[in-house]
Length: 279
Image (cartoon, rainbow, N blue to C red):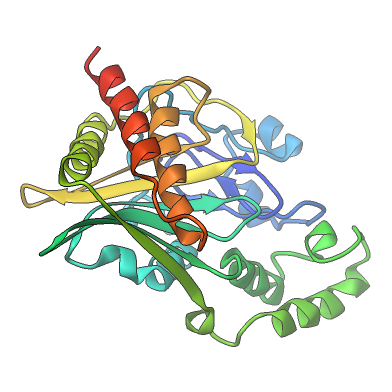
């Protein structure tokens, strides 16, 4: 998703096709450096970048060798959700919604079996990136993010102060909620097989698409001494990637204290996705 600019605009983020993310709050004025990343002057004037929407496959993850845009943000998310990257994790997905906290889900293999897990911060970590952009002058005001929309530059210091006061001094101090649930070994192995099948089919899209808001789903795993990774942004309905996303969203339920068993729902979704992949 990198050669072509893939970006969607939402209250706080635009995503480019190479996997980079250009965060852009609603009612916020971005500096010229952000606009220079747009595919053309015409799309820049409209306030969005071309977005590659993968339907039947994942697209390659962004790479620091291609672009370092928002590298600090992605690094922060991975650091905060470091529990999803331990050696016992067989597969994982890190999710970056437009308006809600980021989260990670996956399958861990333990000596006594397999467990689905979920991790998510209490607040959206993107707020720290917004704060840094405000301090750097990349954003003049927050508008509808933390209050009534305003175009008055004089409001920026007040908004900056308000946002900074609402956040822990360090993102590592943000509380991470977690949950997990045991699943049958055959179901866990099916999920691992699905992840690997999807990841090994990862490829670039030939054409870019336009979109607004949405969610980025980053999938990864280690297999046969290889680190496999790919992602999709808000897949279209009834697509193969949407079936994969539904699996992720069901795994997310284990973060809810009142959810104790997702096995049946997860198995039905995994079986449906396996059937699609076997066609």
